[in-house]
Length: 637
Image 1 (tube, rainbow, N blue to C red):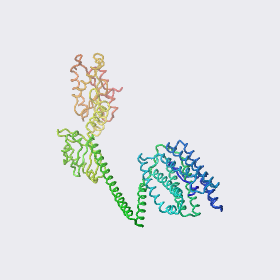
Image 2 (image 1 turned 180 degrees about the vertical axis):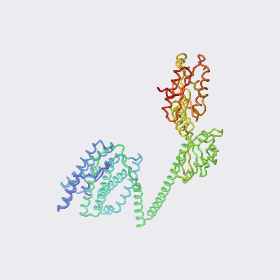
Image 3 (image 1 turned 30 degrees about the vertical axis):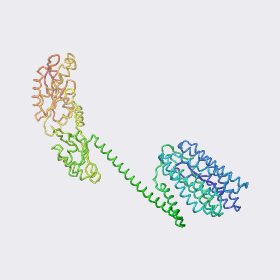
Image 4 (image 1 turned 90 degrees about the horizontal axis):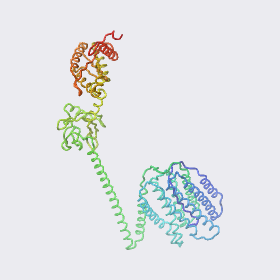
């Protein structure tokens, strides 16, 4: 191997920008092509010019990697890798400068020189740079990488020695030179395996493109060193030109990678590059082992040496059987892991279903229960085991069983999720539970094979809604309808009365001197009196009438009847009789009267009838206590 032989190690990190146009790369390629065009000198002169060109490229790499290592947008591990690559470029400059100085001085023609230690030191530093790149792999992946790389290097090294360098060593070539010819390509191969592995492990910063160019450079470096090893065995001056071209291309790819790191824009931390997980890199160690065993088999069969050849064939056979056994073991382990995962998933799902607050049924197409969750005992009072084979409609209220049957039929015939349905389910003690249910048709699912029905008890929710609705439309003190509900009832009554051609009557009541009760006995006793009066008014009215408290001590009654005016007169008399009886309060008995105004309308609306009844009530108050006045047009004046 020539002292001008340079190693091309590489590393750094992954980006996503476009391919940069490197002035350094273009200038280097142009200079090399121009030299090939114009040079007619000796091979020594050619080598010196090429070495100078490579030294210039290494200086450019040193500057680029050093500048990129200062960028804060890159991850900490990436910056550490770039600092190591800066050291690699510096060692390359020193090594190639020493080789060039020795070549100019004619100091030695030996294969091994002072430059080789510097060039060889590049590889462990490059590998260290690679190990600094942050990836998404587990900590044990580094040991796996080391073992896989060792197998690949060993297999390829055996093949390279057998096919290329064995004859060279047999012809008397220096052993150290042959060793260097073997070390350089194997070291580049180690770097290539490492970089490709880190690409497949998904670098966690955003500079994937830069690492891709590092892999390209490593590939070209492996080709360069293998080509030079072949030249060492067979010779040839034209081959040196092609080897230099390969090395130039590898250096240019390294420059491109360095510039991609320098141009990285996105923050590096926390970014995970997505990509397919290829399987060929894990297979490389087995390919290398296959190459070694194939060579051992070929040599054993070519020259039979007893008992060594027989032992070699036996070792090959045992290794193949061991590999087959390992494959079967891995498959068996994969099946066991899949089964354990499935069992864990089923156990987790079963636990979630059993602990669910909702009632979960699995029904067949006929509506018979195949599975019931443990919440059945809490919600409907049946144990899950006792429900197996029972029709869902048999658990429902008799009035809702047909609705349940229709719901099951609809779910069976339609795929997907059914709409919400409500019905009543009956507990063993006869109590009804209102449920809201939804069902999914999973008859075609082999793991379920039924209708999955989920139901929840909505009794408390509906009771709360009813309570809220009652509070919204009823007076909290007396329980009578409030002003909003009364107005709504009056509007509906007017609409219905117009269709039927009769009038609607509204009674407007105001208690006489109610303020004196509050002043004498307090507001608490006043509220108690209002509640007692509301009870008597409710007792006086018919079930078809609406009694309301409009506010304060004002009440109203809606009379719906074809002869509402006459019915209102009768109702007023009953109210007057009831109000004549004293009301028992904590401080004693109290007698109180009510002034009543009434208004009937056939053509007017809500506002008119309420205003007319109010006017009539004030007319009654002006006339005395406990009187009733029906609205007359003259009252408006």
